[in-house]
Image 1 (spheres, helix red, strand yellow):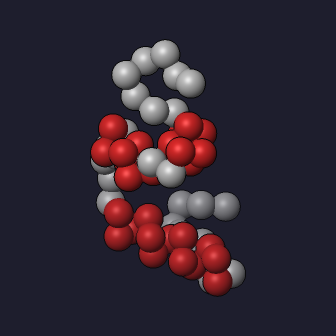
Image 2: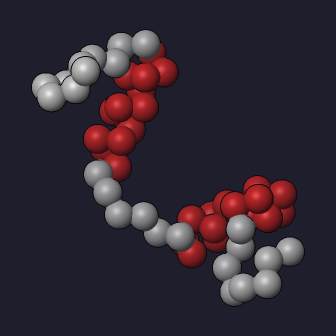
Length: 53
């Protein structure tokens, strides 16, 4: 078990407390852009963007 005040991802997964983990580890970013990119990757439809190889 972790010694700090926050759950580790592994602990949260094992204890079924992923919601608590998410609240303790808020992220910043563009959720929609991330979800869209993840869907394209999963569907094999990733396109090259300008400035990439």
